[in-house]
Length: 349
Image 1 (cartoon, rainbow, N blue to C red):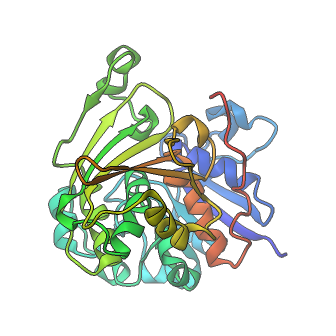
Image 2: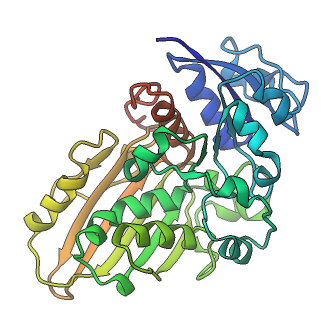
C-alpha cells in the first residue's frame, strides 16, 4: 500500500508527541514535517530524547499554507482559538486536516464562544468539518477533508452512554458524569496546579458546572437520541500521568436485567475493535488501557435506586487524542482502521 506524507503542527505538546510517536511507527505514513513554536529550528530528538535514533527532523515554523503543498494530511495539535484562523478552504483544497483542538467540534458558534470565551470566524470550514468520533461517524469521516478530533473526557463519556440513549433506555435529564483525568490532560504548559507538590497525593474537582467538554458531550449524545440533552459533568484531577475514568449515572426508564443491557452494548459495539466490554462484576481500570487506543466499558444496574452506573476507561493521550486522530486518518485514507494503533496496553506504567 502506498505511503502518504504527514505533518504535525504543535508536535511538542503531550498530544503532539504521542501523535508523532504513533505516526513514526505507522506502516503507511512518511512523517516529513514537525512544527513547534517553542522549539523552532531544534531537532525533535533534542526535545524528546525518546526519539533519539528514530528521528532527525528539525522543528519548523508551522506555516500551514506552505506545508499543505507538501503533504497529504496535516494534524493540528494546538490550543483552542488557533486552528480556526489557520485552516482555510484553500488549505483544505490541497490536503486533509485533522484538528486535535476544539475549534471545529461544536456546530453552534454561539455555544463555542460562550464556553470557550473565544472568537471563531471560520463558519465556512466549520460547516464542512466532521466530528471525528470514529465509532459514531465512520461513514462521514471517510469522505471528510476536515475532521474535528474529539476531546478526551468527551470520547470516554459519549461512548460509555451512547447505546443506552440510542435505545431509549435511560431518562435523558438524569445523566450525571463524574470523570477523573491524569495530569497529562492539562497539557505541557507550566502551571502551579500541575506542579508535583501541588497535585501529588491529592485529588480535586475543577471547573464544576463549567468544563468546556460539557457542550460537546451534550451535542453528540443529543444526536444519538435525536433529543436535546442537558447533563451534569464534573471533572477531577488525579495524581497519575495518563488515563481517564468516567463514571456515568442515569435513571433507567424501566426495570432491566444485566443481560438485557449487555445485549444492547453488544448490538452497537460487538464489531468495534477498540471497544472492549468488561465482564459482569468487573469494572474498567485505567491501568489496563494505558498506552493504547482501547476503550474499556462496564456497567452495573443498581436495582435499589433504579439507576445504571456505566464506567469507561481510556488513555487520554491515545484514544483521547493522538490514537483517535490516527484512527481518523486510517478511515479517511482507507487504511485498515487498526494500522499503527493496535498496540497492547502497557503495564505497569
